Image (cartoon, rainbow over all chains, first blue to last red; front, side, top):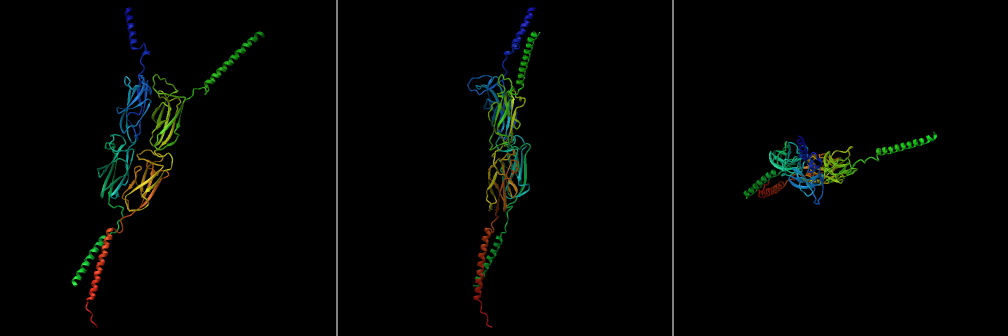
Length: 272
Length: 294
């Protein structure tokens, strides 16, 4: 009986030793961690500004060492943008200038010799870059001419855009507050404007409808749709002073005088 | 008894001296503990540049220089790091939004959009908690693409005042101490904005930055075009900065060329007809029978 108890006690102590409870001082050091503090996930970075990434690490020494010696708890951070290596950081703040569109920024702890930790320690964040403002509702207005205006054959449409960056088409679709201005003339596509310069038109006489619409880089209307319409009437020579033209009357007089000359010549010949 | 008392009195005096010395030492200790000079130095943080309310012009980034005293900047999260109230890092907030984590006392370059901004620095411990009491510093700046100083001016370079036969005119202006940018609803900033062209008092167009204005189909007669500098939100500058030019658009020629030609032909034909009629009358007078003599 005593032998059984002794064996049981020995087994229990052995299991405790194996499980490490009895020797906490020999446990491995806490594993390094990495987290992205800023920007927040899916943040919109506006006005074409660079994105500033702030990250935090624990149990890891950031070093700028290039001496080749390597330690599993020291090194730097490799920065990957959309899967491609972009930069190396040994301080907690990284500034990245990125083009418009969605991007995924992934950070990875690596040792001084560039090898990944085991297990791999990474963190990532998705951001949206835009040339336009990060917030605000896009707006569009026509300030010249007024609704129902009477214009000459050549005319100018002047407009203003707010909270929206007008850029050439071809960029990634779905970028907020960025795109171009679509012109519909008499409800038919007419042109895409890539800046806010006035639109010049040369129209035939009659009534016309001009519609301006904000569209994204892919040409799709914004949601909600942002458009403004204008009705104008075109009439040639509006604003021109029309003077009296005597040409037709002079031409008639010439005809009559010519007939008189012929009559005079005929009478003369007849008299001979 | 006296003899006995003397030594006894001497021991009592020594005791008092010892008590006095003990009190003195205690006082010195308490003074040292409570004295501000003896207390641990308090961490401090100050922004050296830019100055408060400084205007940063020409679209240049803001260079922030700061100083830290009685506080050690270290990388947070080091191996075996033990938190201390005199050790940590600097958090930078831009317009209230967390922006950067600084572990070195060196100037920072901040490219900022035009407009007013507030930059705040705060000392925090390694675990990110602020010090107690809080140690922070802030500075307000105004950034602009325009020059930081100077009075904006605008002049109309072309067309010159006076008559012209064209109804479509380009307008060229010269702007000084002012930077033209596309208006997209951004905040106002000093010496930054765009141009508005007003035709006969009515807002007509806003030319693209550093592009010519082009007004077409202008009516005959006198037309006054005002070129005005405005802020990003289309409000006029204060005081107003504008220039104007008056051109006289000449209408169609008077008389027209066709009218002149036709009138010339009329004159020639009339002359021919008159000559014919005159010669006919002369001939009729020559061949007329003589009148009977009364």
